[in-house]
Every structure is written in C-alpha cells, then in structure tokens.
Amino acid sequence: MKNLLVSGYRAHELNIFSQKHEGIPYIKKAIAGRLIPLIEEGLEWVITPGQYGVDLWACEVVIALKQQYPHLKCSIMMAYQNMEEKWKKDKQEYFQQICAEVDYVGVVSRQPYQGIWQLKARDELLFRKTDGLLLVYDEDAGEGSPRFMKELALKKQHAEGYQYISISSEDIQSIADEERLFMDL
Image (cartoon, rainbow, N blue to C red; front, side):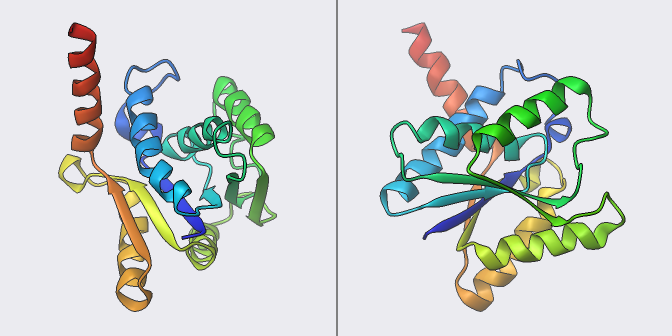
C-alpha cells in the first residue's frame, strides 16, 4: 500500500471541545500504532480530508513520525475553499499550523461551500487516489459522519480489494487502560 486515506470522527462527535482533552493522545497512539507497520511495509502518503478531529490528529501523528520515517508524506484534501472559515479562531489557527507542516494541501472545489456534491466529489477523489482507509469509527458507540466513508470503503473493498482498517473505541480504551496500568506500577 502506497497511499492511505485516514479519517474518522469530528472532534464534537467525540464530545471533544479542546485540544487539551485527555483522550486525544490515546487516539493519536492508536493511529500511530496502525500506521507504523504500514509505513515499514512501504506506505508513502497519508491523506486526510482535514476536518477538525481525527483527520487533523492523524496529520499531527504523521508529522511526528516523519522524524523516524523521512520518506513519509502527508496531505490534506479539502472539499471546498475556506472550509475552516466558520470555525472558532483557536481551531482556525490550529488548522493553519497543521496546513503549514503537511506536504500538500489541496481543494477539490475552489469555491466556498455550495452543497453536498462537493463532499461527494472529495470523497470520490480520495478513494480513487488511495489504496486503503484507516478509519476511527465505532458503530456500537453510535453512528456519525465516518459511517459514509466506511460504506464507500467496504463497497470498494468488495469490488477492487481496497483495504479497510478500523480503530474502534475499544482499541483506544485498551491503549488508555494499558498506559494507566503502566503508570500505576
């Protein structure tokens, strides 16, 4: 696998409203844990839609992993121009910081939001340009925006052998539990 799409929940879908939330490091560790074996097998690009939440945390993980794996590249592919303009100022600044550190930032539609067709066009492009999807999503925890990406990935997996890798809330909780256990020793 050369190109991997990474996405998942938006921060608000996880009830995360601050970059200082205690759950974010565990989500990042779960992402890194899935990425490292793929990188060691030849993964070159991690591509995200750039939404505030798992997408940007994945970018942070890749930026950190580039210290150890300098060949690794990261891209944000947004659906429409100025996607972040309605976000709060601190989130906009965080987004701009991440954009400055990734290798490529692109926009599918060079216009502001006009309709769901822009999101569909972005997703079609992302699935066409990648070999697999790493998705932070847990149906048992309740449906959310990642549901649509999972459905697309499973259709493409069935038709073309596209790879689907998931990280569930149980996976993240397991990392948190292990770390707490280790700290208690």
